[in-house]
Every structure is written in structure tokens, then in C-alpha cells.
Length: 241
Image (cartoon, rainbow, N blue to C red; front, side, top):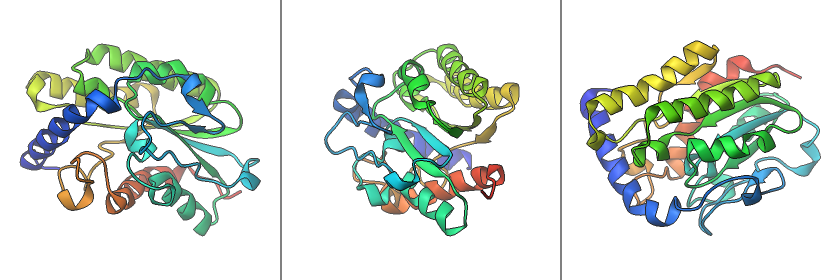
């Protein structure tokens, strides 16, 4: 992603996110906000799909763990990238079930409070997508990095393979913060030897045709691009069962 595009994306993304944060990001997160195998959204319009039918509950799980980008805010269950990912797995003969554990407005600290609950059962892969809301609030990068590291460690202690989904920080916090924020994901991937999606919204962020009217959350077409961004990193880790 070139510098001009990245700057444009960050400007659009985080101005819009700041507008929504007053109602989409104010609640704390934790196990009490989730039911069953899928996290409960904080807003009525935030669709959090259970991407697999009950009959596949015995299959190894791929848990998508994150904020509104994972929760498919504003979309229906059939449009969410977790549902699209499940269909792709089924079509290609991979026997896994995708669990959506996204909570709109979640921060890395909120994720850390509920990660253990989301790792229960036969979880094989964790797609860790958190940090965007930390950047929005200008929280210390060191704290975000510490929280993400703790989640990675807890997953790896259970034998779960981790995919870390990178995000970008708002430019209004300065070039140094932006660089530090971006580098945190790369440092974690290297330190813990986990697979990295450099930028989950590559090909989506900053493009009006790929986003809902709020300018931040992907629309149905954007979800398709996100699915491919995840799939490129995920597929090499999969086993034919």
C-alpha cells in the first residue's frame, strides 16, 4: 500500500471511527457479553454470525477473535467474512468450523479479559484481530503490544496456531506513534513466530465502494476482499481431515 493511499485511508477510517466510537465502543467486553460459540455484539445492528451449523460442532475450530471488523458490524450473517471463510473451507474440502468471536468496540485489554473463554474446546487456529480501537483512543502502543502478546501466549500454551491481523493507527497521533503501532504487529509476529496479515483491510480501507456509509466498516464486497486477505495466510496452515 503506497504512502498516499495509506494516509488517505487512515484519515477517512479514523475520522469516521471517532464519530461512531461514542456509541459503538463505550462498553467493556468480557465473557458476560457472549453466548454460545459466538460473541454477542454491543449494538443491535452489529451482526455476529455463528458461521457453522450445529452438526459440525465436533470439528476442529478456527476462532476469529476481534472487534467490529470481525463481528461484521452492520451486515447480515451470510455476508460476514467468517461465513464466507466457512464456505471456502467447505468448498475446498477442509473440515473445520469457523467461530466468530468478534465484539464491536473491543480493545486489546477487553480481548485479553475474554480470550480464555474463546479458546475453550477443540480450537486449532486463532485469527487475532485487535488493536484498531487502541489506536483510535491513542492508548500506549506498549500496552497494546503487551496485551496482544499475552493473548498469543495463552493460545500457544494450548497448542493453538495464531494468525495475527495487523492494523494501522490514526495519523493525527503523529508519525512516531503510527510507526510504533505498525511495527508492534511485526515485532510480535517475529518474536512468537506467528503468521502475520500485514493489514487486514488491504484493498478495502479508504475505498468507498468497499465500505458501508460510515466509511470504516466493510460492506459485502469489502468482506469478500477481507476473506481473501485472511485466506492467503490461513490456507497453508490447514490440514485435509
